[in-house]
Length: 137
Image (cartoon, rainbow, N blue to C red):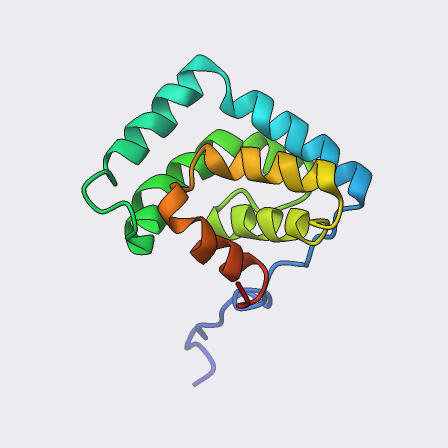
């Protein structure tokens, strides 16, 4: 059928985004910028409001994914894009994972913990750390 349009997806529709690696210096820079952004009063208010929605079930990782991470992603989108991560939840997780690769560096580990504390409840810290490090707690 010569005149029948073909429905094809773009070539990269199902490809994973390119993996972004951060040097220790880039991770430190990104974390400083992230923490600075998270400390702005309007962003503290957004994060506190999102976390308050989890108060009844603070250990529910699905609530974290559905309510808190979208807010964190929107707040951190400029930094995600600056460091070439997708400006979506997957990009936020990639960013956190890229930073976690430098957990042997005590400065980066401390900054990473400070960043995560802005949007990951303490009750889910181990679960999120396991997700970022590939499964082991």
